[in-house]
Image (cartoon, rainbow, N blue to C red; front, side, top):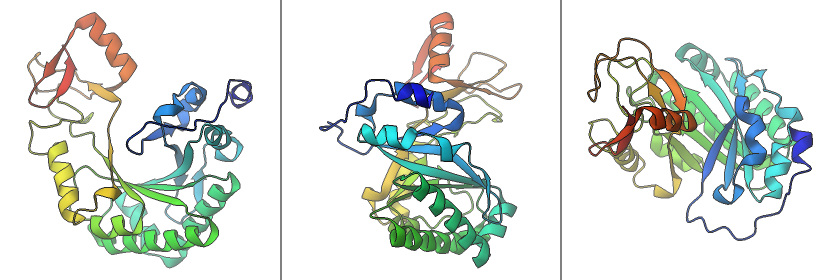
Length: 282
């Protein structure tokens, strides 16, 4: 796909009309779609992802070192960041509680970003334990220093949870250190939920986007310029006992992309739930 992309029409966008930064994630399994994006609607792309292990080694870079996305996006005047992932309480504890492991991760990620002339890094650590609250702040501070020492104005962001169930995230300090917190405003209802419901409700529930945004504003002391609201282009198809809203599920939900959901709606019909401001396929 990279060799083909070089032969497509490629012009540099000069005058965007975007009123805000618009950041999209490009997962490695959808990589071949990147020449088809409307780059006029994007300001940054996060390549998802390179996978870290608990010692800061690169477990899987998903071909990052051979990809042409950075050069191609730069030609469209769009910046590219590398997203790094590590999930799990035990794994994050091992990484973050060790100075050696933190430094190893930072050096490895910096090398990958410099190798491709990318514009920065996006850190996606999930299932963070409360015990590592301060160590995550330390890691991001060390990472920021290292990237700023080697790069001219790197962009440093983090993916952060919709709900901080255990108060493990120091949003205030992390917002000060980074260029932005990417709020994962989705999965309020998830594949394993006992009832069906909107993935990203805007109202209608105690835990919804209204709650999340206000929580971030409060905990960052109003650092609005550092808050990025992430929204989903997917939903779940649950087996349920009835067609009622929030019907009990009888099994695990299956993720459906935006296109798949549109196709389902054309077959089965859809409706709009006013309280949660979310559509649903009947």
